[in-house]
Image (spheres, rainbow, N blue to C red):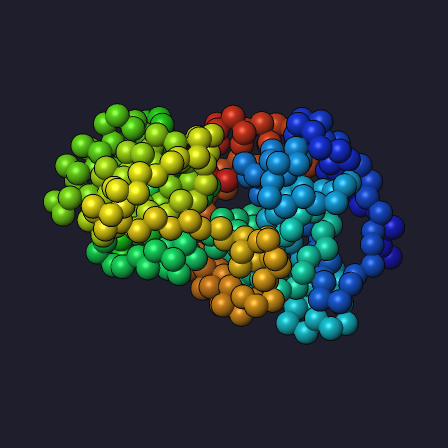
Length: 337
Protein backbone atom coordinates (compact mmCIF):
# COMPACT_ATOMS: atom_id res chain seq x y z
CA UNK A 1 0.00 0.00 0.00
CA UNK A 2 1.38 3.40 -0.96
CA UNK A 3 2.08 6.08 1.62
CA UNK A 4 0.18 9.33 1.34
CA UNK A 5 3.29 11.42 0.81
CA UNK A 6 6.85 11.23 -0.52
CA UNK A 7 10.16 13.07 -0.18
CA UNK A 8 11.10 15.85 -2.56
CA UNK A 9 12.98 19.12 -2.95
CA UNK A 10 10.58 22.05 -2.56
CA UNK A 11 10.67 25.68 -3.67
CA UNK A 12 8.18 27.54 -1.44
CA UNK A 13 9.04 31.06 -2.64
CA UNK A 14 11.14 32.63 -5.39
CA UNK A 15 14.67 32.37 -4.07
CA UNK A 16 18.29 31.40 -4.68
CA UNK A 17 18.63 27.67 -5.33
CA UNK A 18 20.59 27.17 -2.10
CA UNK A 19 17.43 28.03 -0.12
CA UNK A 20 15.43 25.03 -1.34
CA UNK A 21 14.51 22.36 1.21
CA UNK A 22 13.73 18.64 1.33
CA UNK A 23 10.16 18.09 2.53
CA UNK A 24 7.39 15.52 2.57
CA UNK A 25 4.97 16.19 -0.29
CA UNK A 26 1.31 15.08 -0.24
CA UNK A 27 0.39 12.67 -3.03
CA UNK A 28 -2.24 14.01 -5.43
CA UNK A 29 -4.69 11.94 -7.53
CA UNK A 30 -3.98 11.60 -11.24
CA UNK A 31 -5.83 13.76 -13.74
CA UNK A 32 -6.71 12.49 -17.24
CA UNK A 33 -3.64 11.98 -19.42
CA UNK A 34 -1.24 11.64 -16.49
CA UNK A 35 1.03 8.92 -15.12
CA UNK A 36 2.79 8.54 -11.77
CA UNK A 37 6.49 7.60 -11.88
CA UNK A 38 8.78 6.26 -9.16
CA UNK A 39 11.82 8.40 -9.89
CA UNK A 40 15.23 6.70 -9.83
CA UNK A 41 17.36 9.40 -11.48
CA UNK A 42 16.82 13.11 -12.21
CA UNK A 43 19.08 15.36 -14.26
CA UNK A 44 20.36 18.70 -12.96
CA UNK A 45 20.59 21.61 -15.41
CA UNK A 46 21.41 25.32 -15.50
CA UNK A 47 17.75 26.33 -15.87
CA UNK A 48 17.16 25.37 -12.23
CA UNK A 49 18.51 28.71 -11.04
CA UNK A 50 16.10 30.64 -13.26
CA UNK A 51 13.20 28.36 -12.36
CA UNK A 52 13.42 28.77 -8.58
CA UNK A 53 14.16 32.51 -8.73
CA UNK A 54 11.05 33.15 -10.83
CA UNK A 55 13.06 34.39 -13.81
CA UNK A 56 12.25 31.57 -16.24
CA UNK A 57 9.72 32.15 -19.01
CA UNK A 58 7.42 29.65 -17.27
CA UNK A 59 6.56 30.18 -13.61
CA UNK A 60 5.27 27.08 -11.81
CA UNK A 61 2.66 27.62 -9.09
CA UNK A 62 4.25 27.87 -5.64
CA UNK A 63 5.15 25.65 -3.88
CA UNK A 64 6.67 23.32 -6.46
CA UNK A 65 9.44 20.77 -6.93
CA UNK A 66 12.07 21.56 -9.61
CA UNK A 67 13.47 19.02 -12.06
CA UNK A 68 12.51 18.66 -15.72
CA UNK A 69 14.15 15.35 -16.69
CA UNK A 70 13.83 12.05 -14.89
CA UNK A 71 13.71 8.29 -15.33
CA UNK A 72 12.18 5.48 -13.31
CA UNK A 73 9.25 3.05 -13.33
CA UNK A 74 5.58 3.80 -13.80
CA UNK A 75 3.52 3.27 -10.65
CA UNK A 76 0.09 4.23 -11.94
CA UNK A 77 -1.61 5.52 -15.09
CA UNK A 78 -4.85 7.45 -15.54
CA UNK A 79 -7.71 5.39 -17.04
CA UNK A 80 -7.45 7.15 -20.41
CA UNK A 81 -3.71 6.39 -20.83
CA UNK A 82 -3.21 3.30 -23.01
CA UNK A 83 0.32 3.82 -24.43
CA UNK A 84 2.02 3.19 -21.08
CA UNK A 85 1.49 0.75 -18.21
CA UNK A 86 2.52 0.23 -14.55
CA UNK A 87 5.94 -1.35 -14.09
CA UNK A 88 7.26 0.04 -17.38
CA UNK A 89 10.72 1.68 -17.37
CA UNK A 90 10.42 5.21 -18.71
CA UNK A 91 12.15 8.56 -19.05
CA UNK A 92 10.20 11.81 -19.02
CA UNK A 93 10.36 15.43 -20.06
CA UNK A 94 8.65 17.14 -17.12
CA UNK A 95 7.12 20.54 -16.59
CA UNK A 96 8.68 20.30 -13.10
CA UNK A 97 8.72 17.84 -10.20
CA UNK A 98 11.68 15.57 -10.98
CA UNK A 99 13.71 16.11 -7.78
CA UNK A 100 11.50 13.82 -5.71
CA UNK A 101 10.81 10.17 -5.02
CA UNK A 102 7.72 10.38 -7.23
CA UNK A 103 6.49 12.63 -10.01
CA UNK A 104 3.24 13.02 -11.93
CA UNK A 105 3.86 13.56 -15.64
CA UNK A 106 1.78 14.07 -18.76
CA UNK A 107 1.81 10.79 -20.69
CA UNK A 108 2.50 12.59 -23.98
CA UNK A 109 6.04 13.40 -22.81
CA UNK A 110 6.85 10.07 -21.14
CA UNK A 111 8.94 7.65 -23.21
CA UNK A 112 9.61 3.90 -22.84
CA UNK A 113 13.23 2.93 -22.11
CA UNK A 114 14.44 -0.08 -24.13
CA UNK A 115 16.09 -3.09 -22.53
CA UNK A 116 19.84 -2.74 -22.17
CA UNK A 117 19.80 1.01 -21.52
CA UNK A 118 20.53 2.18 -17.99
CA UNK A 119 17.93 4.47 -16.45
CA UNK A 120 20.61 6.99 -15.44
CA UNK A 121 21.58 7.39 -19.09
CA UNK A 122 17.98 7.37 -20.27
CA UNK A 123 17.11 10.26 -17.95
CA UNK A 124 19.24 12.61 -20.06
CA UNK A 125 17.77 11.60 -23.42
CA UNK A 126 14.28 13.14 -23.83
CA UNK A 127 15.32 16.71 -22.94
CA UNK A 128 19.08 17.04 -23.47
CA UNK A 129 19.46 14.79 -26.51
CA UNK A 130 15.97 15.64 -27.74
CA UNK A 131 16.96 19.31 -27.81
CA UNK A 132 20.05 18.58 -29.88
CA UNK A 133 18.44 16.10 -32.28
CA UNK A 134 15.47 18.35 -33.03
CA UNK A 135 17.70 21.40 -33.46
CA UNK A 136 20.07 19.68 -35.88
CA UNK A 137 17.56 17.58 -37.83
CA UNK A 138 14.41 19.71 -37.82
CA UNK A 139 15.78 23.26 -37.81
CA UNK A 140 19.38 23.29 -39.08
CA UNK A 141 18.95 20.36 -41.52
CA UNK A 142 22.48 19.12 -40.80
CA UNK A 143 23.81 17.02 -43.70
CA UNK A 144 26.46 14.27 -43.81
CA UNK A 145 29.88 15.69 -44.65
CA UNK A 146 29.15 19.16 -43.29
CA UNK A 147 31.31 20.79 -40.62
CA UNK A 148 29.62 21.71 -37.35
CA UNK A 149 31.07 24.00 -34.68
CA UNK A 150 29.89 23.18 -31.14
CA UNK A 151 30.42 25.59 -28.25
CA UNK A 152 30.37 24.48 -24.62
CA UNK A 153 31.24 21.03 -25.87
CA UNK A 154 31.95 19.43 -22.49
CA UNK A 155 28.63 20.30 -20.88
CA UNK A 156 25.59 18.07 -21.11
CA UNK A 157 24.08 19.86 -24.11
CA UNK A 158 27.41 20.32 -25.88
CA UNK A 159 28.38 16.70 -25.33
CA UNK A 160 25.08 15.61 -26.85
CA UNK A 161 25.67 17.93 -29.82
CA UNK A 162 29.11 16.43 -30.46
CA UNK A 163 27.75 12.88 -30.35
CA UNK A 164 24.59 13.51 -32.37
CA UNK A 165 26.44 15.60 -34.95
CA UNK A 166 28.94 12.82 -35.51
CA UNK A 167 26.14 10.24 -35.70
CA UNK A 168 24.48 12.36 -38.40
CA UNK A 169 27.70 12.29 -40.42
CA UNK A 170 29.09 15.74 -39.67
CA UNK A 171 32.69 16.64 -38.90
CA UNK A 172 32.57 18.26 -35.48
CA UNK A 173 34.83 21.05 -34.22
CA UNK A 174 34.37 21.54 -30.48
CA UNK A 175 35.26 24.43 -28.19
CA UNK A 176 35.79 24.15 -24.44
CA UNK A 177 37.51 26.16 -21.73
CA UNK A 178 40.08 23.67 -20.35
CA UNK A 179 42.37 20.97 -21.67
CA UNK A 180 40.44 18.30 -19.75
CA UNK A 181 37.16 19.45 -21.26
CA UNK A 182 38.65 19.53 -24.77
CA UNK A 183 39.97 16.00 -24.28
CA UNK A 184 36.48 14.91 -23.23
CA UNK A 185 35.05 16.43 -26.42
CA UNK A 186 37.56 14.49 -28.52
CA UNK A 187 36.65 11.28 -26.69
CA UNK A 188 33.00 11.95 -27.51
CA UNK A 189 33.70 12.14 -31.23
CA UNK A 190 34.88 15.64 -32.06
CA UNK A 191 37.45 15.76 -34.87
CA UNK A 192 39.09 18.84 -33.35
CA UNK A 193 38.84 20.66 -30.01
CA UNK A 194 39.74 24.33 -29.69
CA UNK A 195 39.99 26.72 -26.73
CA UNK A 196 36.83 28.75 -26.21
CA UNK A 197 38.75 31.95 -26.89
CA UNK A 198 36.74 34.42 -28.95
CA UNK A 199 39.88 36.32 -29.96
CA UNK A 200 41.45 33.33 -31.73
CA UNK A 201 38.37 31.30 -32.69
CA UNK A 202 37.74 32.62 -36.19
CA UNK A 203 41.30 32.04 -37.42
CA UNK A 204 41.49 28.61 -35.78
CA UNK A 205 38.21 27.41 -37.32
CA UNK A 206 39.01 28.76 -40.78
CA UNK A 207 42.37 26.99 -40.69
CA UNK A 208 40.48 23.71 -40.29
CA UNK A 209 37.87 24.48 -42.95
CA UNK A 210 39.04 24.84 -46.56
CA UNK A 211 35.53 25.95 -47.55
CA UNK A 212 35.86 29.03 -45.38
CA UNK A 213 34.23 28.07 -42.10
CA UNK A 214 31.63 25.95 -40.34
CA UNK A 215 28.40 25.00 -42.08
CA UNK A 216 26.42 24.78 -38.83
CA UNK A 217 27.13 26.45 -35.48
CA UNK A 218 25.56 25.00 -32.33
CA UNK A 219 25.72 27.70 -29.67
CA UNK A 220 24.34 27.32 -26.14
CA UNK A 221 26.82 29.92 -24.85
CA UNK A 222 26.17 33.23 -26.61
CA UNK A 223 28.26 36.27 -25.74
CA UNK A 224 31.66 36.78 -27.35
CA UNK A 225 31.76 33.25 -28.77
CA UNK A 226 28.61 33.92 -30.76
CA UNK A 227 30.14 37.11 -32.15
CA UNK A 228 33.24 35.16 -33.20
CA UNK A 229 31.06 32.46 -34.76
CA UNK A 230 29.63 34.96 -37.21
CA UNK A 231 33.16 35.54 -38.47
CA UNK A 232 34.05 31.85 -38.90
CA UNK A 233 30.75 30.65 -40.36
CA UNK A 234 30.95 29.52 -43.98
CA UNK A 235 28.86 31.33 -46.61
CA UNK A 236 25.33 29.95 -46.36
CA UNK A 237 25.87 28.60 -42.84
CA UNK A 238 23.14 28.06 -40.26
CA UNK A 239 23.70 29.37 -36.73
CA UNK A 240 21.62 27.78 -33.97
CA UNK A 241 21.08 30.07 -30.99
CA UNK A 242 20.25 27.58 -28.21
CA UNK A 243 21.04 29.48 -25.00
CA UNK A 244 23.18 32.07 -23.26
CA UNK A 245 25.32 30.33 -20.64
CA UNK A 246 27.84 33.19 -20.92
CA UNK A 247 25.28 35.54 -19.40
CA UNK A 248 25.21 37.85 -22.42
CA UNK A 249 22.55 37.70 -25.11
CA UNK A 250 24.33 38.72 -28.32
CA UNK A 251 23.13 41.40 -30.70
CA UNK A 252 23.46 40.48 -34.37
CA UNK A 253 24.66 42.89 -37.08
CA UNK A 254 22.19 42.06 -39.83
CA UNK A 255 24.63 43.13 -42.54
CA UNK A 256 26.82 40.10 -41.72
CA UNK A 257 23.85 37.80 -42.25
CA UNK A 258 23.20 39.48 -45.58
CA UNK A 259 26.76 39.52 -46.89
CA UNK A 260 27.43 35.85 -46.07
CA UNK A 261 23.90 34.51 -46.71
CA UNK A 262 23.77 33.29 -43.11
CA UNK A 263 20.66 31.88 -41.45
CA UNK A 264 20.26 32.69 -37.76
CA UNK A 265 17.93 30.14 -36.16
CA UNK A 266 16.51 30.56 -32.70
CA UNK A 267 15.61 27.23 -31.16
CA UNK A 268 13.40 26.49 -28.16
CA UNK A 269 12.83 22.75 -27.74
CA UNK A 270 10.27 23.51 -25.07
CA UNK A 271 7.88 24.60 -27.82
CA UNK A 272 7.49 20.94 -28.82
CA UNK A 273 7.03 19.48 -25.32
CA UNK A 274 4.62 21.87 -23.64
CA UNK A 275 7.00 24.50 -22.33
CA UNK A 276 6.15 27.26 -24.81
CA UNK A 277 3.87 30.27 -24.47
CA UNK A 278 1.05 27.84 -25.27
CA UNK A 279 1.01 24.10 -24.53
CA UNK A 280 1.62 22.38 -27.88
CA UNK A 281 2.76 18.99 -26.55
CA UNK A 282 -0.31 17.15 -27.85
CA UNK A 283 0.18 18.62 -31.33
CA UNK A 284 3.82 17.42 -31.51
CA UNK A 285 3.47 14.26 -29.40
CA UNK A 286 3.83 11.75 -32.25
CA UNK A 287 6.90 13.24 -33.98
CA UNK A 288 8.65 13.84 -30.65
CA UNK A 289 7.85 10.31 -29.45
CA UNK A 290 9.24 8.88 -32.69
CA UNK A 291 12.37 11.02 -32.38
CA UNK A 292 12.98 10.04 -28.74
CA UNK A 293 12.46 6.36 -29.61
CA UNK A 294 15.18 6.71 -32.27
CA UNK A 295 17.48 8.39 -29.74
CA UNK A 296 16.79 5.66 -27.18
CA UNK A 297 17.63 2.92 -29.67
CA UNK A 298 20.83 4.72 -30.69
CA UNK A 299 21.85 4.90 -27.03
CA UNK A 300 20.90 1.27 -26.34
CA UNK A 301 23.04 0.15 -29.29
CA UNK A 302 26.02 2.23 -28.17
CA UNK A 303 25.87 4.76 -31.01
CA UNK A 304 25.18 7.46 -28.42
CA UNK A 305 26.68 7.40 -24.93
CA UNK A 306 25.19 9.96 -22.55
CA UNK A 307 28.00 10.72 -20.09
CA UNK A 308 26.56 10.65 -16.58
CA UNK A 309 29.85 11.13 -14.78
CA UNK A 310 28.72 12.56 -11.44
CA UNK A 311 26.05 11.00 -9.24
CA UNK A 312 24.65 12.47 -6.02
CA UNK A 313 21.99 11.11 -3.67
CA UNK A 314 18.90 13.28 -3.21
CA UNK A 315 20.12 14.10 0.30
CA UNK A 316 23.23 15.71 -1.26
CA UNK A 317 21.26 17.82 -3.73
CA UNK A 318 23.10 20.99 -2.66
CA UNK A 319 26.44 19.69 -3.92
CA UNK A 320 24.83 18.36 -7.10
CA UNK A 321 23.39 21.75 -7.98
CA UNK A 322 26.57 23.60 -6.99
CA UNK A 323 28.65 21.30 -9.22
CA UNK A 324 26.39 22.20 -12.14
CA UNK A 325 26.15 25.93 -11.50
CA UNK A 326 29.90 26.32 -10.96
CA UNK A 327 30.60 24.60 -14.31
CA UNK A 328 32.80 21.97 -12.68
CA UNK A 329 30.88 19.13 -14.31
CA UNK A 330 31.99 17.33 -17.44
CA UNK A 331 28.87 15.67 -18.79
CA UNK A 332 25.61 15.30 -16.89
CA UNK A 333 25.06 15.66 -13.15
CA UNK A 334 22.44 13.21 -11.90
CA UNK A 335 20.50 12.88 -8.66
CA UNK A 336 20.01 9.24 -7.64
CA UNK A 337 16.73 8.88 -5.78
